[in-house]
Length: 337
Image 1 (cartoon, rainbow, N blue to C red):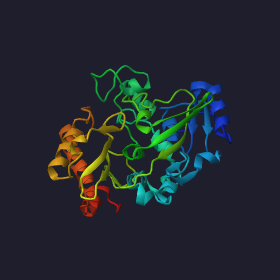
Image 2: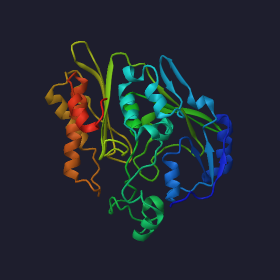
Image 3: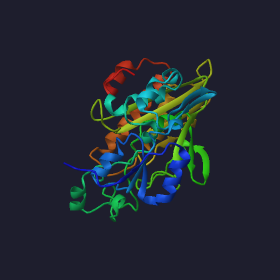
Image 4: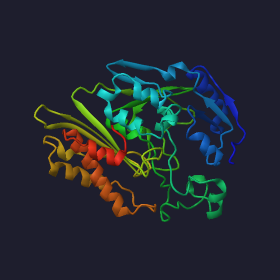
């Protein structure tokens, strides 16, 4: 049985108090909300904070506000996000993404902020300490080699968030708070394409809010491919959002991939602007998406990954142009979404 290492536990009641604790404790402290990713990582000694700063008692982190858009507290559980009024109708990509994270039991504990900040993953890193030590630690845990791409100079562990691609496609912004103040940035700017340090947060910063704009006239969706119909992290996530004129002409479009690089990858889909989502237009976007697939050493054949990226981007855009994709979605997602 793998056990947690010793740690101190702090449970502040305000963001300011949490920020002060993080500033005082320095890099030895980490934030915990649901803990569904952090605690298993601690058991495997992938992360060993000396102090955990809990967000459970900070009520402002659990707020949900409708108005000119939607504001979500990052300590909201994924189950609460799924149940939130208007999310399914107005922000369907987020609803579909949150509904496909893990299992119902975990969604009752796992939080939106935790999913956005979830650690990157690979088949070498996500093992227990003895296994990793036996083959030689990788770049992410102090070694010199990334076993995903042995000729690479950085960590190539993959982004594991489902909600991040969906929220980026929906134009989300996030607010970060630290002892010295707050700042706001586009969610896409929170990530870097580096598996070891995939978040651009400064030391001691806490994610305190996710803000979505009003999206009148937009349609969105999220497709997830995984080995099993539940629990597993994504082998591929595709989020797409389109704003179209009444005649179907595309006015704005966003396509974002998850699970193919160390950050959610925003795809240049500008080739469809001013046109309708014809088969030819969709094929052009899918071809651009394939170029974002990182050629790394995994248990999945690279050619197969490229084919499935082409297929899933096509599924997403065909759904947004109005096709009934329910049968294909049941085959891929194994649940009605």
